[in-house]
Amino acid sequence: MLELAHPLDAIPVHSPLAEARERRDLTVKQVAYRSGLTEDEIEWLEDGRLYRFPSQSAAALAAVLYATGLGIDRYEARRLAGLPISGSFRVNARARLIVVSAVAALLSALAVMVIAPNLNLTQTRTVEAIPNASLVPPWKLQVTVENGNGDISWTRTVASRVGAMGYTIAKVGRADRFDYPTSTVFYGPGGRDVGLRLARQLSVDAQEAPGLSAKQLLVVVGPQTVASQ
Image (cartoon, rainbow, N blue to C red; front, side):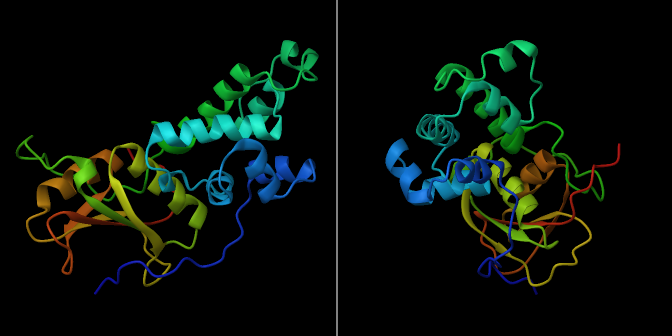
């Protein structure tokens, strides 16, 4: 029997944004004051918990404000995003608060974290076609995302991707164990079609589970493995 979300374990996660803040010897509270964000919103950005924001647009705007509050220039923004850095960026790296360039790079980083097309989960089989297109809209569904592999960073990335597709993230937590071999979408009685839809979007398996309503879905995240073709 699967158990719905337990509290998250305190697992340290490498955060380039937090490192950028710490290099400036700034606290979360100070950056929150400079950027006009809340301390929680700063921590969500640094931890990659983008699903906590009410929408993709809200997460993107928060990234803009964060970059402004931290004084990130376009060179540093591209480095944080893992994007190529040309010579021209190195020449102009001292120009601070070039917001348009910094924002573009940070939003690219958000895109990688949230909607990257190569963000594949372990695939156990091809999910059958959804029988009809008249399904409940994603935002009317409550999705719980559980860490079934011990990697909370990967679980948060998956949760952010699910949220970016329009689903309402009810909670992110730990599963009943950390040895799930694959990622799976679970749906309740009457929720087969919406469960299959999300499973196809994530390229994972799907199956019915007790304890879920027709408008509730549970994603148990397995190891980060590239899906087989």
